[in-house]
Image (tube, rainbow, N blue to C red; front, side, top):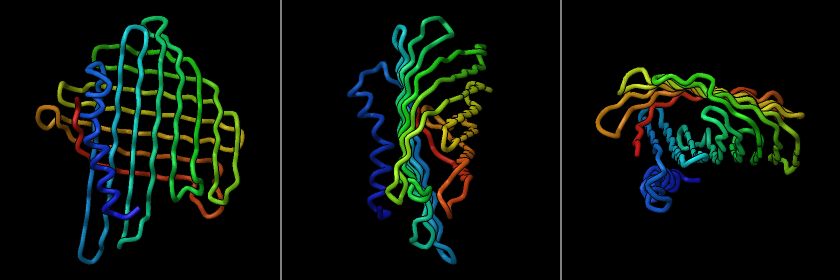
Length: 237
């Protein structure tokens, strides 16, 4: 995808939160995130990241959705291009316990895979529930379908273990840590996302994040571990 089209896609994703609120109603809340870094001179690099997260809580149900896009180029040569989406619905049968169903999709041009799709069902519990701090843990079985760049397909059963820790440090700052392990018959995908977010003015804030993803078994010529350091602006609604 060329740079102009990709920037247009990011702009659409970032502004999409307004349309999402209008379409789905005021019960939906979320964040639109956008980051852009460009250098010129001895090196010509571009880094673009966009993310949209939505959440809805009503009675016994909680629904959350995520869309994410990342593109990096060096001297007009694309060095990273990834798109991801997920949907999760939680049924809260007690104040802190819930059953969940999750669907996730990811495509990464440089992973050796054309795409990966996973469907997971399981149990979650909020094990820490303070006013300024929460910790949710989840576990459940599922299935994953993958298509390699070579055209081959992989279908496997998986076990997902995940956790999300949130610390509201002050009214204007927040720390989050997310960990997930999708343990499969052919490969295990481990992911860690560490982030600090601080309010700038009104609904606008700055976010610094560090992401590490490891795939235990990868196609030849592909590295097992990817890392990402990002600084983005976040609009909350």
